[in-house]
Image 1 (cartoon, helix red, strand yellow):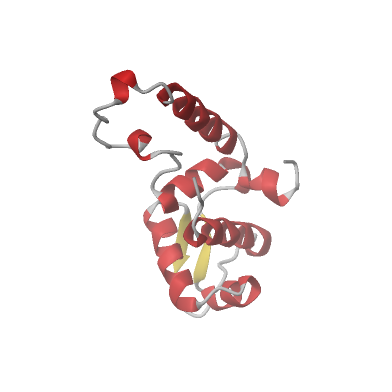
Image 2: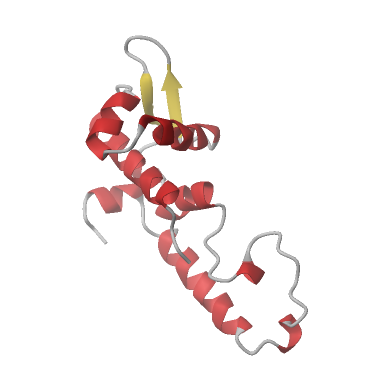
Length: 136
């Protein structure tokens, strides 16, 4: 499993909004400058977060984005799964994947399943608030 820049940047955006938003909307320009992410790439990431109901948007002079919930209500796992699509360590465990013809005889499949379970369990146990407050 390799987390792409899209997933890593999405996490950084969510942290930035948590740290700089309070009750106000944060402009993408400000986020882009603080996080050193291009506006074009940032717009794509925020669009995914918005469609996934993780952020709220507002147009206008005081517009921008803010978290839809409190930082303690988000897990790192849900943010990464939204942006990455899957965190499965091998293709045969990806959601919707066709069963491998070797699955019945694959001696390594239990290993990959357990690794997948451990990854999911850990990332789903860490909240955005945990990351911000360095409790991991």
